[in-house]
Image 1 (cartoon, rainbow, N blue to C red):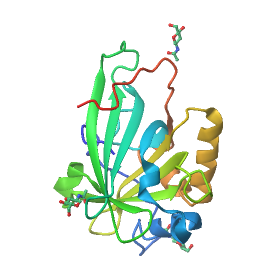
Image 2: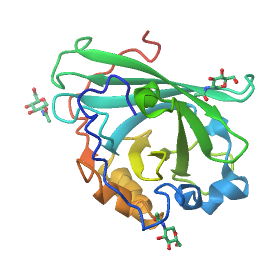
Image 3: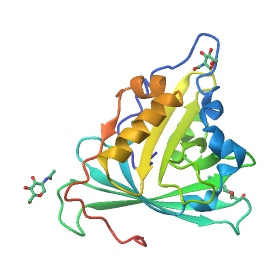
Image 4: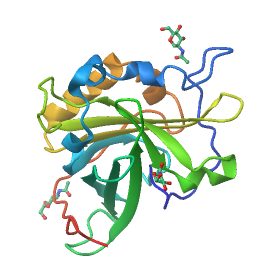
Length: 220
Ligand SMILES: *[C@@H]1O[C@H](CO)[C@@H](O)[C@H](O)[C@H]1NC(C)=O
Ligand SMILES: *[C@@H]1O[C@H](CO)[C@@H](O)[C@H](O)[C@H]1NC(C)=O
Ligand SMILES: *[C@@H]1O[C@H](CO)[C@@H](O)[C@H](O)[C@H]1NC(C)=O
């Protein structure tokens, strides 16, 4: 999720809620068993990922594009942490070195596998600045393989239990359509369908990375 985010505080975020149940109650149960049974290792998240698609009302959908996430894992901190250099380009067809917007996202690991905490000052008006971030699937079932892709789900509730924010990020080391399709299949298979199809705007924004240029991976 993105804190430079603009308009969206109308927050008719849509509900995936069954009556009487909080909207994010099932989020942790959507995490793939591979990650719960030894496959989770935060250091395998390190590297450069392109955002192939997203469902995230805090991201400017029309003007900007070329979203990329460069994740640097630090296992010497307690808890282990991820510095996530998230960049996008506005407008998308700006030349190399132009129009790049840089955001520094921060995540911590928690005691639970594949459950992170992200800084989300965006939601301060709603009483929270730490948002749960679930790694739902990673594109491999081989222990120790750097994750080829990462399907992340941020789920934030209002105090009432209604959904405040559902963010789904499709991050991949490669930009292929094959990978995008595998990730979309995985998202639905893991139960994210109601969150993808709900909300305003509903659905996924697919990012066209054709002709994209990106700032240096150590941009400030
Ligand atoms: C959570 O999962 C249970 C059991 O699969 C289901 O009955 C319920 O509707 C789900 N709740 C939400 C909010 O998706
Ligand atoms: C991460 O942990 C550090 C050290 O406890 C803390 O200062 C920071 O606020 C945490 N950040 C998030 C996003 O949870
Ligand atoms: C990519 O650049 C080429 C050459 O300038 C142009 O013809 C094409 O329309 C561009 N594609 C996109 C998706 O921007």
